[in-house]
Image 1 (tube, rainbow, N blue to C red):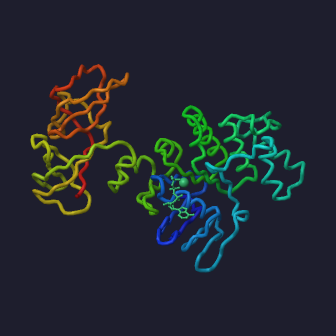
Image 2 (cartoon, rainbow, N blue to C red; image 1 turned 90 degrees about the vertical axis):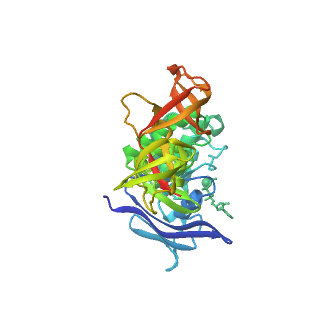
Amino acid sequence: MNPSFVTLEGLGKSYGKYAAVADVSLAVAKGEALTLLGPSGCGKTTTLRMIAGLETPDEGTIAIAGKTVFAARDRINLPPEQRQIGMVFQSYAIWPHLTAAENVAFPLQVRRMAKAEIQDRVRKALAMVGLAGFEDRPATQLSGGQQQRVALARALVYEPALLLLDEPLSNLDVKLREQMRLELKLLQNRLQLTVINVTHDQTEALSLSDRIAILNHGRIEQLGTPRELYEQPVTPFVRDFLGKSVTLPARIRAVGGDRVTVELAASPESVLDCARPAGGTCNVGDLVDMSVRREALHLKHDTDQPGRTLKGVIGTVLYQGERSECEVLIGGQPILVYLPADAGLAAGQVIELAADALRLWPR
Ligand SMILES: Nc1ncnc2c1ncn2[C@@H]1O[C@H](COP(=O)(O)OP(=O)(O)OP(=O)(O)O)[C@@H](O)[C@H]1O
Ligand SMILES: [Mg+2]
């Protein structure tokens, strides 16, 4: 593993009695793209602003490139301009009264760089984000995506050690967002940039990140690769935040080693064989939660093993072209699953669903 490039230790920030960020510790490697992901108000922006030096933490330390830039106990607190950070914030629009080039030149002028060098760097930064030739275009005559790219060029122009992105794509329409997402990823790879990205868009997080930290109420709930978080969530919060899960209460019927047989509480004829839940006790008669990813449920084939099926009745069927979104009643309890549109499913039909990758959770 690379040595850590950004290190946060025990970072905390309260507003009055409200802990916006609590005990956040995190190490980001050089060249890594890490995403802070979580619901609105979970502390993502506050964390980013503390790293940037725009918000003073109550406690903890922040080190960037081997240098302590903040330490509550030692009263170290470097101002933003001494932290070598480039930022693109959702609210950080570019200046409308300036041209693209003037916008990008601004951070260099603040740093009192020579005019010729400024010109050269601005040209390169604009080319890097695909805006060569747009130098003299007034900001107001740029599209939303182009403006966003000017903001990115402005953040990159003084070659920051670290790039902080706070939902930089959220103002763009879907198509532009997808395009910019790809461009950002390519740019990050090409420049070997260390990036801390903030979003509450899961697709963006899963596709842009080497690792994701899921934040909930100011705390890191889980930190790992996108695949680890998606396939091995350690808490119900992470399970339900990433992707779509079906969760049904179940009762333990038998325990044998690390395998457990459960019956669904709403549908005792659905008997399932699962791995033992992690943590908590596990005794016959206990109530647990059974969860399965929506996409892991499919219509039962003859080849499906027994002990993996749920019996249900089709409720509503919403045709969506390539597939149908079906409401299936399991013992009267509705769940939503995607089933093949050509399966000829109709309301009232009795079906059997087979499931890969069932998981049990203590209640
Ligand atoms: N200046 C402030 N004064 C008081 N409370 C604040 C202040 N800034 C943030 N908060 C509170 O701290 C919590 C975390 O805010 P933060 O902006 O970090 O959330 P976020 O995760 O970025 O959310 P969003 O996804 O909506 O941008 C919120 O409950 C917010 O109301
Ligand atoms: Mg925010």
